[in-house]
Image 1 (tube, rainbow, N blue to C red):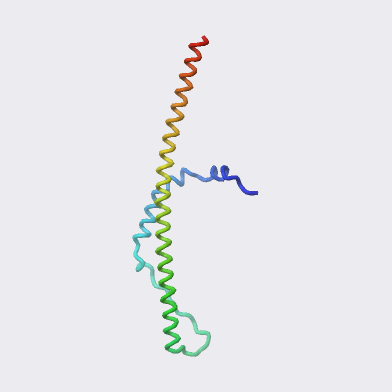
Image 2 (cartoon, rainbow, N blue to C red):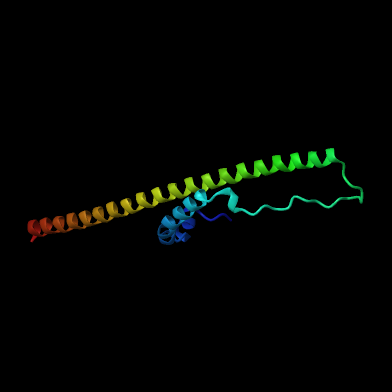
Length: 128
């Protein structure tokens, strides 16, 4: 049985999410600022299936394939860090919007309470 959306949203600790949003944004910016040269190179060596020494052409082909794969991985990493940064910025925007809505809600509750007090005073004055 699926959990209804409203009860699922009530389970999420929104206070924690809101309080951690600025640190997530900072970490995403730090991740974007980090240079790709910080990552240590991994060995691309693969053991030979046979004891035969690969030819120079085969080694060149392996090197080209590894170079293409490395370029693709670097592009993916750049795209992922940009996505994380954009999500963190959107999260920070949501946090500011939620805090603004909370303040508006507080003002509306105070206004509603004052209007009930005023209506109660008018009703008391008319009937008593």
